[in-house]
Length: 337
Image (cartoon, rainbow, N blue to C red; front, side, top):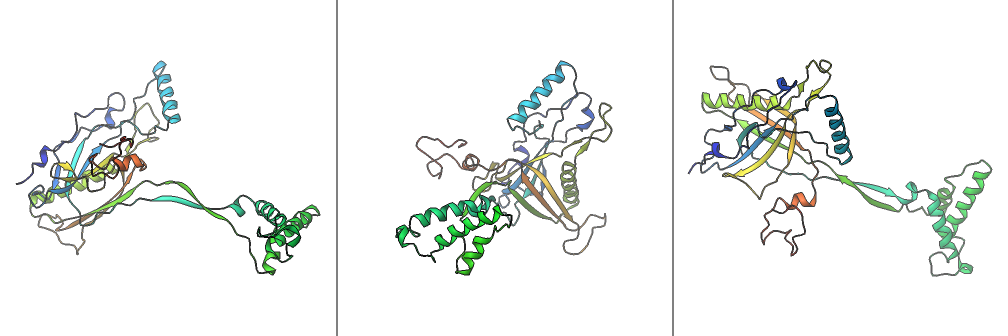
């Protein structure tokens, strides 16, 4: 039985921009989804990708006390790291077949920190002196410390470093050279330091082979909508220097659907920006119909999520049932639904 894709949720009524910048907010397109292929939602095509588009709403220029209020709001939001602008509700929905390849990448950033190099070799010198006074490897007493023990060599070398520096001869690498002559080297004492997590990026690839004139027109419209919302607006209001400011491109919410619900087994993304569009009008060699429409078109879309992934967000991708790996007796993990 076919699914009525036009009945899927497309969001509440659109908020319109008013005031001097109203011209930036073009009339809202119909929320009737743009669908490819035409039989999407049939019993054999009940998995699909749903793209919901949200436009950024620039603030209306104000002055006087209202302007002071806006400045206070800017200060509050910057201080609380609340940087995302206001957006409309969904202004358009596109539904496409499930692509052949679907991957989700998670990237974290770690650095190597050398306690010896980054904190200064003086730390190694102190460690060597303490070790030498304790008998080198800890099994000896000071009277048994051998002159070829690397801790004794290092302690003496670092003392020489200090002496050479005082008379202006340098010698910062003297300890390294002294140890090298005896077949030793200073341990850089590497540690792995967590630096953060990057924004998730993903790519979706679609190949359109329209089976009718109606599908060809739909493909052209779908590509045009992606390109339109990929582009920024240019403010030309009389209240601003002409062409000085952009309104950033629209946000996209990408959902992997099964029938009329989101598929809980596939990646779940928040709002994304569309970073790349690649359109190939001749993926198998150029050919066109009598009206000029390409026989086949390949569309590649690159997205980047605008919020980092946290444990709570990943947990929110699972149902809060007994099979969830994040189910706890206290339900202490935020974001479970």
